[in-house]
Length: 590
Image 1 (spheres, one colour):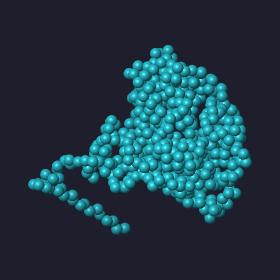
Image 2: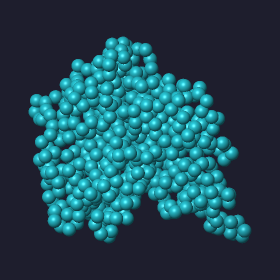
Image 3: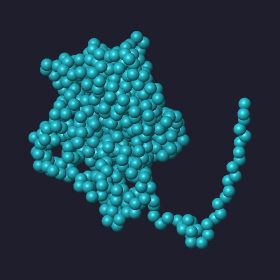
Image 4: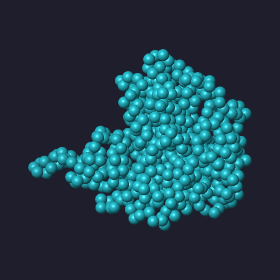
């Protein structure tokens, strides 16, 4: 065998430059790299972003100021913003281009005065969103009005839904849209029936917070009641609340809290409903958590589509800050952060990245956010509904909450119900209820002329089940009593408890394709199995005959190799159709 001897290549140092060249090489840059902002751009950005602290984590808030005012983001303004925040232009651009609600425009481009966003996610699609979008394109809305297709906007119970600028509209029609545009209704509307700060205090609100602060109710007793209640995280994961509080409490401070109000799952709108009616019940739960766990800073992350609710929450937060129920020094610092149209930010680590002003890319775990969360500190993460139960559970007792439930499950759940039912909306029902019972007892039954054919038990990612399995309990499967059936045994899960009912006039394969297109659109692109897998799945699912072998392999890779739950759960609707509705796809084996 011939062995090649290694050859050492000497590295010769470069002599330091001298003379004028040395002065140029060693001179510090007077400006950041990239496009030099114009004075006009600096002035415009300075005016629009006036009052916002110059912090990197507030980059998205700055971008919203520019987008809201000019209906888009222009290179000159992005360059000026980068200079203002002392960030590279690359950082600013990558964040601006990541979120769907930011429109990138050329400096000379004319932005539309109003953008009409038509939701085409599953419930709205079933209600005729495609036809509505086509009619709006043909209608005389004005040359400065643009019609766009949009993913779920959180009004599934009022399908079809549109958003005119920041004006949300359910049960939309072309005449209604035309009338709203003519009247100039493009800003958030008022929310009738919302319980404000003064009214909530009159109803006994924040007394629990006062009792905790005064020592009349020990923190351990709150944890005991949460444990007795068996309350789980109701954003989708179902992790026991008392355990989460205990884990974060055991970490060294300072500790943080994030409230996940992104709620982008197709078919889910329960948190939006609670926020639009009784926001202080969540805020009191938030303050209780801060006192029990020892939390100093809070971020409320709200999905951008909830424009009316955002304005109401800003008002109610200010009332709470101006008239705190306990001394101001004992209150945590609370910040409201606005999402920008990224479903992936419902994943808690991606949400935290967004709170820090970055792209919403999920983090690899471990470490978990309870240990390393916002700005590297232990972080408690909850959705709105979970926190809204805290006051009632502590005041009424954990046993009261746990006394509700069916089929061995415990507690109460709010279900977002949409599709072919008489009364779509948010329905409070016992944990473990079946979809048949939920529809008949709470949602008024199926629409006239419609019979239950299939249903989504847990939003877009929870899978699709046939009517023959409408007896299964709707709840998290952890801790299920022995002998009880579970959704997991049938390849599904309850997730965010978003139930979409399909009838004999619908096809499960069409629903699954709609959901997979949603996942393709919302994939953050960080990992290949999700980024490429969702696109490949869409192509395969459009074929008249489905390729069984290829779909099986694709599903396996996505589940096993994706970084986060989006890619891991995205195959569920496709796999459900193959398992329960094979007559719709006539699979072929290659």
